[in-house]
Image (cartoon, rainbow, N blue to C red):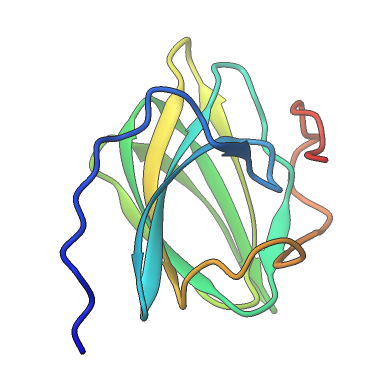
Length: 135
């Protein structure tokens, strides 16, 4: 049986704080993946994390910042702003930060769907985080 059609609006307020310290608005999901909207306030640096079982694709919607990614011997910092899309393959350590006075926002697709608590593991990052650790 096919899943039903689902439609929603972006929630006005965050549903949760992600393990990296960004505000999360949970969007829709299907068997193969889930989607969420992330916001990192101006002047903030996220907590560096890696995922145990999922990989992600992010599309930045507004703001300006940087994303650090490291996997094995590969490491890079890329500038992110509206229109930039990037991947976070399984096992990648990543951290992001805002630059300027506008919040950094992105939509992320997680494959398979986000499994819940314990998926993200805090790792050593490139920068000192400025967000509180999530509960």
